[in-house]
Length: 417
Image 1 (tube, rainbow, N blue to C red):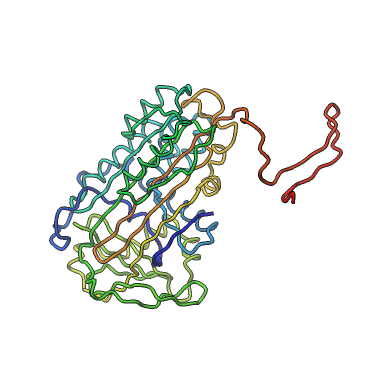
Image 2 (image 1 turned 60 degrees about the horizontal axis):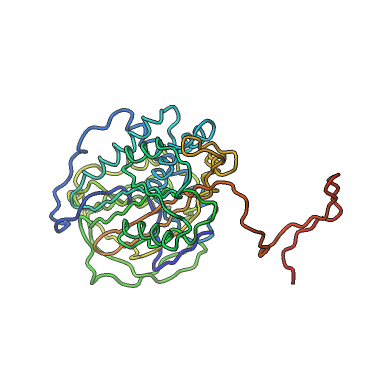
């Protein structure tokens, strides 16, 4: 289950668009020149990959939200996809097929998938000089494990990953990995691992950091405590930013959409608010690529500064979110990668599989703009003889005759007191 520390309340749907910004803020947001086009035209294959990646994003949000008991879910599908995309370079046979399908890359070769990640990253990083985006990848390999050089060659060439060999038993190993995550998120994700299991052989990390200033900012003097209605019908008071701002607005059956741009308007925060009488849960359950495209088509195109200014009230918030994605990814089709028998023979010899995929995220909305960060960890594990038997948790006990296999007694011991 996720652990959430909340300093505000999320309004509507936390969209993956918050994490696809770029470069460095260099001046007042209100002076930004509008970005009219991408640095280059997208190829047909790139458009297809982006569409498939969005399908993965909606599926991941839906599966995580179904299992979440906390009120907020905030993910970076981009970070999860890139971390798993690196891992894909070590998978083979049915394991490769299931991971490729889950990520939405059916029918594409490994080289085509790698090229898509590289080209999309380069395109995003060059789009808006008024918005900061950092994307970084790293691989931490257990010293002495027989990994294949071709695997490291692929992920360093296509993903720009730092590949490091490390003694996982050393006192500084955990601090080194957590330090990398902190350094590449400006300290917003200071810890991604609590311990290193003796059987862990590799950690693959992706970090995404976004910092964008609103094209038209809120006046901090107008931020006041305002009521926010909860899903259960209750109401809480939260700090809320108020302003009369140019915002792209649209209404579709069951939803109200609003879009606030950052910097030169290349990147936006898209807010989808369920209509009165409709729940956020229903909205997330019904969300797919076709519906998302329909919603976005209703929003006006053009310069946001040309649209009419309207009253805007947006919660000011800061939250941290953490979630293991194993169950969600299994539901999306890659369960084979999480159990012994998985085929990662393009990474290492022997029986390796994914122990867990975990994501830590950070979100801050204030009068100036949005800061968001994510780190995804893919932990690879390999079977080994246990170092000892420490029965310190609920266990199964059987008393049996060994040669015939006859079980005399069988029990589940949950509390030995």
